[in-house]
Amino acid sequence: MNHHELRKKFIEFYKKQGHQEIGQAALVPQQDASVLFTTAGMHPLIPFLMGDTHPDGSRLVNIQRCLRTGDIEEVGDATHNTFFEMLGHWSLGDYFKHEAIDWSYKFVTEELGIPKEKLAVTVFAGDKLRGVGLDEEAKQRWQSLGMERIDELVEDNWWGPVHSSGPCGPTTEIFVWSAEAEIPPNSLPGNDERWVEIWNNVFMEFNKTEDGQFEPLDQKNIDTGVGLERVLMTVNNYDSVYQTDVLAPIVAAISTDQLAHADRDVRILADHIRAAFFMIADGVLPSNKDRGYVLRRLIRRAVQAARKLDFTDWPLLTEAILGVYGPYYPQLLEQEIEAEILAEQQKFTKQLTKAVNFIEKAVQANQVVNDESAANLAFLAYQSHALPLELGYEILTEAGLVLGRKSFEQALDQKIKAHQEVSRAGSEKKFGGHGLILDTGELKASDETELKKVLRLHTATHILQASLRAVLGDQITQKGSDINADRLRFDFNYPDKLTAEQKAEVEAWANKLIEQGLPMNCVELSLVEAKKTGALHFFDHKYPDKVKVHYLGDSISDAPSKEFCGGPHVSNTNEIGKLKIIKEQSAGAGIRRIKAIVED
Ligand code: GLY
Image (cartoon, rainbow, N blue to C red; front, top):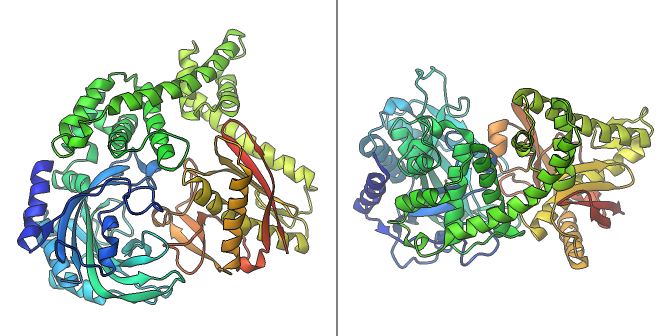
């Protein structure tokens, strides 16, 4: 099945069930400055899910372009994209669970022709925090359709709200078996990653209020999201979305290799440049803040991938993207998008040139004699000239060094670890080394009094990170943290010195949150589930299969702060006192450092 057929089938099927087709919204939400991008088809419909009358009636269907960057580190695998198209249909207080489930089943088995044996579904298992029990009704409906594999999950089967308050509800999702192997008898979406989620039926019957209550909405809604690329992948038995006819021509423009669709760099380049085209068409330009920063990051990651692939034929790539999407999105044809991308590429290249010059000087001075000294040099260039570490190998090879890739990467890995050890040992020495009653590397305390202070500062660090992201933008990520009884120290990516106003705003935001007296909660989740909560974590870190997520407030789904973190923390933010920034300084190229204290 090709994408033209799928688009048509979906719209026609739901039109037959009385739905009216509605237009798409832009990727930049027009009415809602609080969210960077349109992440789902329901987003522009929030007022109508809350009860406003929609001019086109109570049954709606469309295809919506979406952008999600929460999964950016997964891009390169078989199923994750930043930009994607979502097939969606809605009931605004009209039909509810039975019809939504029956139609989704009918569409998947009859219109897509996927056999029942290859399907599994999940339903909401129930959750005390939200005061909502197991979704018996959905479960029974699936059973009545003969569905045997039914999993019951919590966080994966709750959707929304998009903001801290708004419409949300339990979901039921449809998964397709994606592997060649036979499906093991006890295999379910919650325990086997070979199930690919293609369909999400949200039973949007709650409103989450600002004070964290889940109150029934006056109208019960259906909000369905179906990933176009994933459906094409599963229905055609492809190994990845990059073989589908929306992405395959883009992959082919990047490389003519038969296996190009399986190459991680090809996938990253294809995904990110496609996303960049749609973002620019919807009015985003590269910058250091918010949407512009996301775009800059996507283009730069794409440029890095292109370098690794020796790819230079940008006009061919443009032609491929426009060939697939031009007929559906004429706005792509009306702008000079390729020129914007190339301008950003040139800026990035200038920055890289500085790092390369630095490396070449060292190479000419014969400072590099083996893989280890090469790795040292790449690390130095990273520290002093923001050289992306993943480009170290290519650039050193280009600079005239023949390196063993594996041994170089191992040496670089060791270098990074050794650097972390050195910073740790340095602070241990400073605080007496032995005799610490707490030493997690990040947190150090030598007695009970210090311990209490350190816990306050640790929770305050989570809040500080949330505050920096709220004030400076979602691009902020942690680059380092060190806490002792005197102060917290937090490093993060930001190109400029913070202004007095920005610092005051960060403090005020954090203290407002602290004053709410929110509980610090912790859940242990599988890595996959933990990532899906949207909790902050390091992109390049290898985590164990199970991780702890600490979050503030009663519900993880819309917690103002959630992070992968083993703890320990205070149990309520009212124990923290008042956060005060005492210093803000540079900590390397593009990295800022904040030191802050807490006062009673
Ligand atoms: N709004 C449903 C989804 O994005 O899956």
